[in-house]
Image (cartoon, rainbow, N blue to C red; front, top):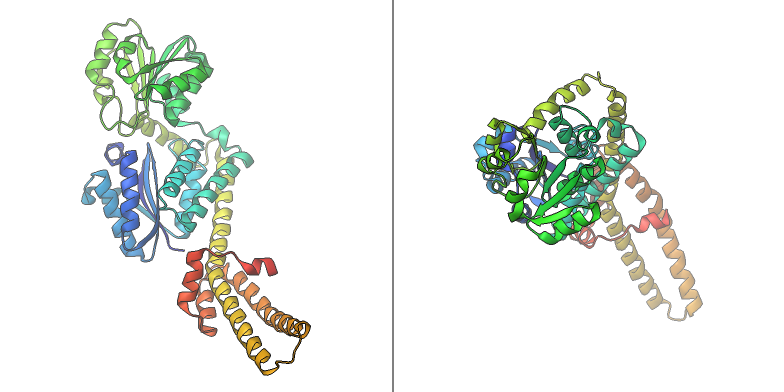
Length: 449
C-alpha cells in the first residue's frame, strides 16, 4: 500500500485561500482524470467540502507523488503552486488512513463531531467509482472510513459534542442561542437544493419558521425539497423579489460567482424595518463580504464560523470541555481501526502471490500426473482418479501451513517483505502474480483454511 493524501483545510489555510482553492464539480472530475493520467498514480479520489480540499492517491513513488499531486491541486484550483504549498499537508500510508478516519469521525471538522462529513465522504467515493479512478485500495479505504465514522457516532457521545455546520451557523447568527428559540415565526429563504441547503431547510422547518422558500437554478429540485417540508419553491431568478420579505437567508450553492451582491442585499434591507440574518455556507462564498458593513444585517459566513470554531477547538484540545471523554474514545476507535485496516491491506497484498504459488503447484501436479498416465497406460479410470486425488492432497497439505502462516506474518507491521520472499523462494513469475492482481482473483486459501 502506498496511500498518499495532499490537501488543505481550515486548520492549515486561511479562509481566503480555501475559498480560492474551492473546486467545482467539473473541476473535481477533471482533477481526478488528470491525476489518474499522472505517471506515479494508480488510483485517485478527491474530498472537497466547504472547508477542505484533499486529493487521495495510490502512488508508487512518495516524493514524485507529492510533487505531482501538489501541482495538480494548484492547476485545478487556480492558486499558484508557490502560494499554495505553505498551506498543504501531506500524509502517507498509515498516517493517511488515520487522517481520513479522523475526518470521518468529525475530529478534524470545524465543528468537532459533526456528522455531515460522512455524506461528503460517500459522495467522494461515488465520484471515484463513477469515473473509475477509485480502485481496490481507495474503495476499501473510503468504505471503511464510512464504517468507522458510523461506529464513532453509535458507540460514543460524540454527537452531543458535534453539531452540523448548518446548526452551528444558525446558532452563531443568534448569538449562540438554540435555533428552536429564535427561528419560530420568521420567514426563511434557502438558496440552493444540495445536501447542505437541504439540511438547512429541514432544520428551519423543524424549528418552526412561519414560511420557507426554496430557490434553486433547477426549479424541479427546489419543488421536490419544498414539497417534503411544506415550503414554496421559486426559480433562482426570483431571489431578488423574495429577499425583502425574508428574515433569514441561508445560501449554499455551487456557483463560482456571487449569488447575492452587496447592492442586492442593501436594496432589500431598505425595504425592511426588521433585521436581516444571512448565513453563507458556500465555498467560494455566495454572499458579498461587503454585506458585513450594512446596517440592519448580520452575516455569518465560513470565515466567521472558522473564527468561532477555533475557540471551541482550543477547549477540546486541552480536554477542558465536557466532550473530552467522548473525543478520547473516538480517537481510541480510530487508532484501533487504522491498525486493523493496515493489517488487512498487508494481508491482501500477499494474496496474489499465494494464488500464483498454488496455480504453479497445480500446473506441476497436472503435468506430472499426465506423464505418469502416459507411462502406465493400463490404469483404469478409478485408479487414475485415486492417484490424482492423492497427489493433489499431498501438495495441498504441504502448502497449507506455510501459506496460512505467511499471510498472518504479512498482516503484521513490516510484513510487506514476505510476498517478495515467497516469490523469490519459489521462483514465481512476477507477470503471473501481476496477472492475478489485475484479475482481482478471490482467495482460494481462505476457503481451504
